Length: 252
Image (tube, rainbow, N blue to C red; front, side):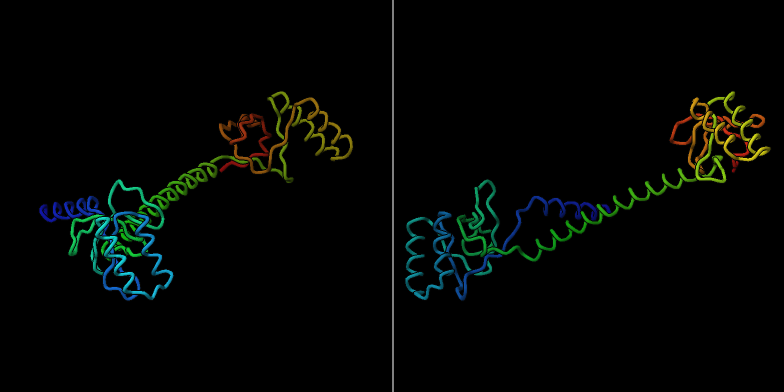
């Protein structure tokens, strides 16, 4: 088992260190083509093919002349090559080294469109991309799981807290214990005499004096402590402290 693991590790390392392999193609119906000594000549001779030159004899003589003068060479369709490290390339021409073929080990320039990555290397990069996608999905799923767990815990904590309740959408609470006593007196007044003009006037006076504030219905209450008719608390997240009437608090 250990030997197998070492072999797999050795293969993975060699795959990472080996140069990417390309299968060299030839233009049209040509069975062979030239690797030239310069990028400009690689581009020039490929231009004859693009222009559909039908003077095959001229082109062969031209290739042979350029090969003799510039140190180029012929390759066969299907020869394997790798890009030469450190060479400055453009979008049209590539500097390559033959790694499998008649002229193995020789280097030169060829039009990049005549190079196609081998199936093995396509598969290698496809697996790499799949692994990256898998790792990214795993990280995303874990991040979502952590976020969902944090949200669940937060909701469980909120559910464990007492809440402000009221017939309306807002709940009036006092800002101090003395103000809470005044608020209770006004509420009792309203129950005895009705919630008409006088009652509303008294409630507005408490607010104007800064003795009461309103909080949303259902506001969770942290550090809630009940003492008689009143509950001191701190509003969850709002960080506002206050004193609520016990009748306006629902305990879990």
